[in-house]
Image (cartoon, rainbow, N blue to C red; front, side, top):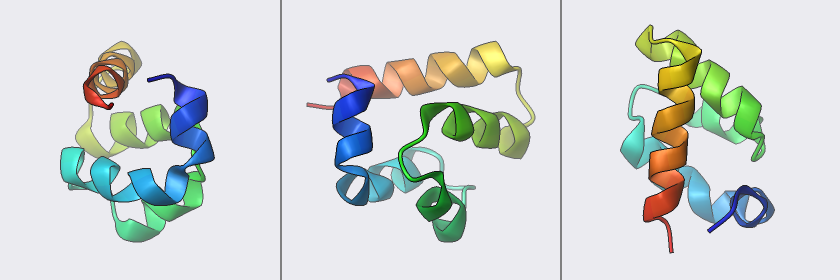
Amino acid sequence: MNWDQVSGNWQQFKGKVREKWGDLTEDEVARLEGNRDQLVGRIQERYGIARDEAERQVSDWLGTMH
């Protein structure tokens, strides 16, 4: 799956994002509106990890979506 598919169906994927990154609030996820860069930045900030690690987590997660 590619990010365009996730972004285009953000309403469906919000719950899956919350399952993976439970520290993100429902409001935070809703405001992302499918923007990958904002998701990476929010994960980086919330979990206190490097941007590269946050990007890797998003890429790995994307690879598990069908």
